[in-house]
Image 1 (cartoon, helix red, strand yellow):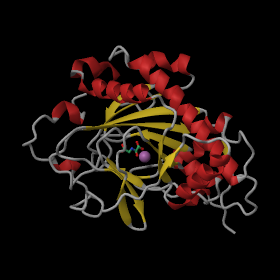
Image 2 (cartoon, helix red, strand yellow):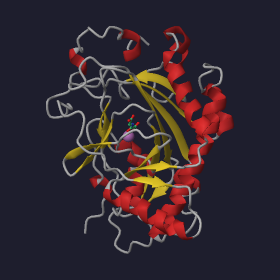
Image 3 (cartoon, helix red, strand yellow):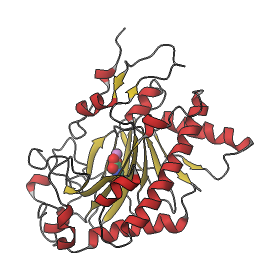
Length: 335
Ligand code: OGA
Ligand code: NI
């Protein structure tokens, strides 16, 4: 528990400990704030009739060019959108003793509060973030592991996870139509595992030397990120970092590795990272939609020259190590 950045770090004058300093090649340096924000923003208010074709086109284009887009008018009610972020912030603001029972060094725990990456004691550099994560499906079964405080946590997060899953299914349906894959392709096992990962990045004394999350691709199918109103998310494209500007009531959507494989590389699962800032804490919530461990992944049959072999998702997860960088090479078919 004392390892949590939010537990031990309470003095802005204190220097950044050496164990949090990234090597020069991977630290953000002085270019923390990238020049432009070009990640597409897609309005989902009209997905019926004529406008549907246009929205599908925008989603496909963004998934190809960036692997990232933001959505507005996404259907998650405004008050729930706000309450969800508030309750996550309240969780991290609670005194240490109220959170201690959830702290664990065991990655297999159903609901886990920890810091940095999967294994703090074995990593070379620590990340400037604390994390709370738990699964969200089946709701009735997993909700009993969730935090009991704040008292409205379970009610609000359950409602949010239902809405986020609904939104994810809607986007996946638009994608399957756009790619020419059969309707319902992504339903069932491919999108059965739902996980919420709440990142808390306290203000940092030296944002140019450390990272909240290092450059990584999400291993799952698709991610819906509530990034609140503090900037920090950056996407890597053509050798440059692009900032994803927080927008009022918008959610960030990104293509995970499995969707890149199913789309036979038509879509890109873009690398991204989270930088810190010295002024305010930043809280974000990633809703990961992914396959069940025994689900078979392969390029959709419409692609007549598949670039990847079929595999079980659990094989992918065993190979996936986000912090050291990761490649899809092991899953490629070689002609
Ligand atoms: C993630 C992620 C970005 C952020 O949790 O996988 O990329 O800004 N989060 O917190
Ligand atoms: Ni990510």
